Length: 130
Image (cartoon, rainbow, N blue to C red; front, side, top):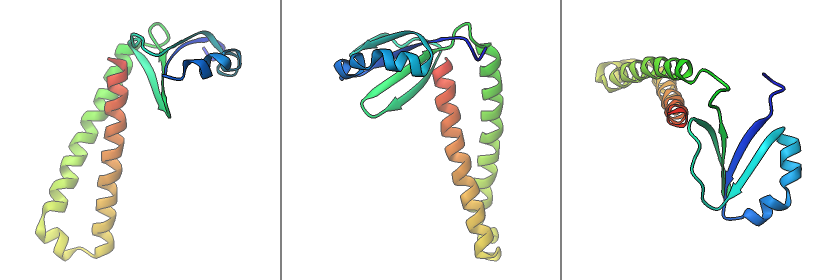
């Protein structure tokens, strides 16, 4: 639910700075609890953000059906893997590259690069939930 308050763990060497802004962070992020530490066990499964000098973890256990989300992300990952394989085969085909207009080849390369970025994000999401 949107009104549900979250828990967060911030791992940073700058604990004093974060602690000095604790109340502001809790209010703005609508947190129930905030743990700040230089080192801590990473809660699993969790959503993660890496920002300059800190890692932020939001535990999601009990907030979502993790198995269902893992299945959805895995299915998307598998489909994207097949798409990337196809794009790589197309772009490694000398006949396609030499006969197709340059703008078409460039567009196919751009599609491949976009798909590779998307699969990197998916892998990161899968890792966070496992």
